Image (cartoon, rainbow over all chains, first blue to last red; front, side, top):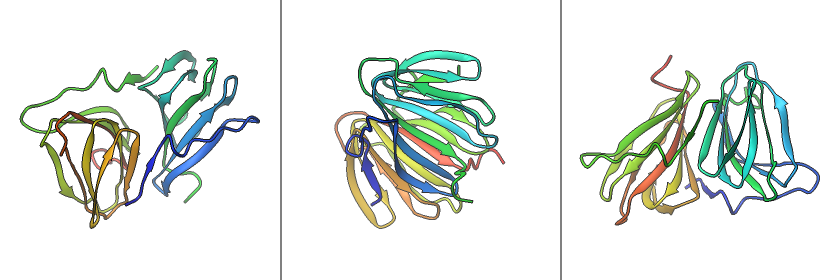
Length: 108
Length: 108
């Protein structure tokens, strides 16, 4: 059975946010993002892809379109295709996210 | 900002597994499934859609293809398009799941 424990795959990189892929097909990818305090995924947009961020642990500041908000564990936030989005770990603890993007721009 | 707390939307139905939609586009839907003890999503398959189940709380028995396994909190399991899949709450507590399906068969 193709399953994972999201907290067993986490790894942190002192240089930059770490991305760990869990699953992917041409329909989607599902990653875990691991952010040390101060690390970020810079604001960017995808023309055709929708993205969801689910906060597994910790808290961080999410930017979606022209809105910025701090979200913590158990919150899930939607960045629709075309919307600028990003996240920064503004807390003093680690931030881990479950990320779902669809379709998958890496596999056509 | 379009965000939700997954535990604030949960609701249970004594008659059958409850599905609460969080977000959807033609690319995907994202739901919370709430299963009382003994409730299930019967085994079924989708020709073109991939599905992920993430266990938010509790534990249950997942069937993917010809494999069956009990999974608990923090486990995520992948049912690729074409594979028979289902879940049953075999525990004595409530089971809540975050579910992604892509593409969305309800919106063409």
